[in-house]
Length: 180
Ligand code: FES
Image (cartoon, rainbow, N blue to C red):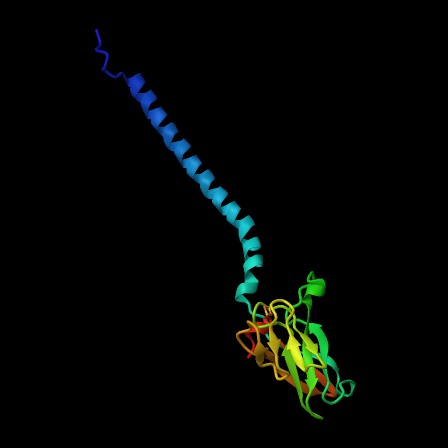
């Protein structure tokens, strides 16, 4: 009579078959996980790249026409609008920005950023007071953009300006708060 623990050729074959089956299942499970990772990455990475690309690709500054020189009276300070340096097709009005442009002489202009240096609110030019005022927290700037009162830590940023073919041009930058 055979003992209980004794193995027969049939049971050995069955064990080997079960072991091979386990190996196959394990292999296919790992293959399935690997394929899922590859497919998931293929579907996700383009979207992640699309969202993160603007962080790493800094738009180059661009010169924008803001009007003919003759349109600006000597000594005037007026609001001019222009597109930011990297307008996206879907940006709509959000691609529009502005600056306070002053004609300081026949051939010289100064362009102040409209964004307050405190938290970026748009400042207004008050002609009678010759001051820039920020409505958010009471920031006040002198006519040369230096801080007169309130929380702004720095003078208003300025854009580079030039005259080209009778047109006043402002060099745009993605974040006016970072300009000098
Ligand atoms: Fe202008 Fe605060 S954002 S004073």
